[in-house]
Length: 450
Ligand code: PMP
Image (tube, rainbow, N blue to C red; front, side):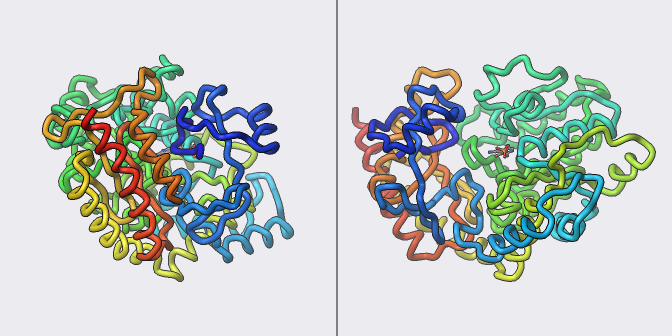
């Protein structure tokens, strides 16, 4: 059992097979101390399950890194990839392909309001990187306000606007990034709406120098934080009052995860710029996208768009994107996520009633978190790992590891189990995974008593 999260954990002591050993020797494990890396070889993946080299099956209750939104048997996407690779496997971005033009059109259709022109890249990180540059070019201003409990990517721009501790080793990062407090009612001293007034004051004190406020509409890896309904509309108002754009980072919340197309749709808010990746191709291909409204798009008619990559709009990746979005539409997966998400929420709430170590459950659709605590009244986190970059808790790792031994993979980060199954999951599969987490939570209940 290895990939509890985008951080490696040190809870695994299993033996490595030959492939895993080769991999450990020659491939960097991400976000980890290399000596602790324990890669698990995956040999098969079907539906919502994947299989390791010993033949063990696991329910993928976090869609890997909250990205395999179609599960692992999306035939239409698999065929589109093969067809495009054999037709035109690559052309430079100055050429186009049918799939690129049609995916651009499709994104204009499914994203809110006037968002209409897309820059394609190959990851969420690059989508955010492009959003920062576009906001700076368009406004002629430098500063970006983002929030502490956020993750926006690993390269210098995107890690600089990231608020969680993964940023620390890369500091000071790019100039002009400022962090604001979060809408985190359970764990912050500020009420979510008070935290907004704080951002208002920050913008005032920065004078007219802020290009954009960048937020995940529903915070993902930092704990599935759902703000009050009025939060995002008011944030847009505050940003615009100060001449700043609103950028919504939909890399994790996008494409049906929340039971709506995008996290911002939950609050009926149209951002000025939006970033996407992960669910855009159901993780079948690496693809990032940054979409802007028509006013921002038109700015670049007369001002050079100083940005691009060799693989911008890669034909095979955009073919996967187009087939993925068509699959969401043809199989009504967004509506399905909304419906079955209610069932998932109800099962999670039953766990909360049973297990005293569950501090709070949060989420919408198929995007849910279980925050654990060692003292429910005082809301004390388990976090006893002395690691400034990965301050989570070994207890929470053990909860995930125990669920894994019971056949369910569930990611965790900083005291929170992150539940984000494929949009295709059935009620029976949910029940199976919930039972495995139930067993896992006995570990944290016991740890409360120590
Ligand atoms: N933004 C958000 C909200 C994310 O969750 C992530 C990845 N977890 C990223 C950006 C970066 O995406 P990637 O890992 O594809 O570069």
